[in-house]
Length: 211
Image (cartoon, rainbow, N blue to C red; front, top):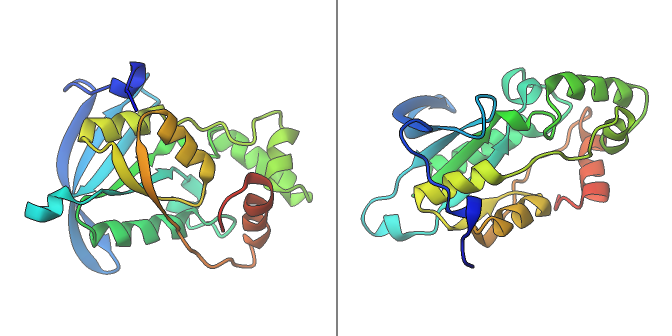
C-alpha cells in the first residue's frame, strides 16, 4: 500500500523524546525503551514502550498494542471496564516478545470524549443505559477515537507490518487505512466481572468487538 500524507509522517527532535524506563511488572523489574511523541497540539501526546529484538529476533514482525488511556481503569483500577486488565495482559506479552511495542494514547480517554464527558456518560449508565446509548445521551459519538498519531509512531519506528493485540475491528481498519499492514490479530482475553459484564456484552453486541 503506498503511503501518502500523514502516512509518511516522521517525528523530529522537537516532536519526540526518548529514554530507558524501568517498570515494575508483576513484582519484577523490566526495562523498556520509552519514546514520547507530540501530535497536532500539546494535548495530543503519546508514549511508545519498546522491547527491542536483537540479531535474528530483530527481523520478527512486531507485536503491538495500541492502548487507549483510561484514568479510571488504568490508574484507579475501576471495575467498570476492562482497560487495566487489557493493559497488564499486553505489557506481559510485550515484555516477553522481541519487538514488542505498547503505544499508549492518553487523549483517547472515554473513547475519545475525555474524562469529564466519560463520567457524565457513566451517570447515565447508572440510570440503566448501556455504554453506547449513554454516549448518545450526552450528545457524543459512540467512539470518537482516531489513530493518526499511532500510525505515525509505527512508521517512525519502522514498523509498517505488525501483529496487533486487539479485540476491536475498527482499530484494525483505521490503522490499515493509515498504511499499517495488520498481518495477524492477537486477541486480548480478560475475564468479565460483576461490574463490567454488561459493558463487555455491549462492546460485543453493538460495537462488533471480538470478545
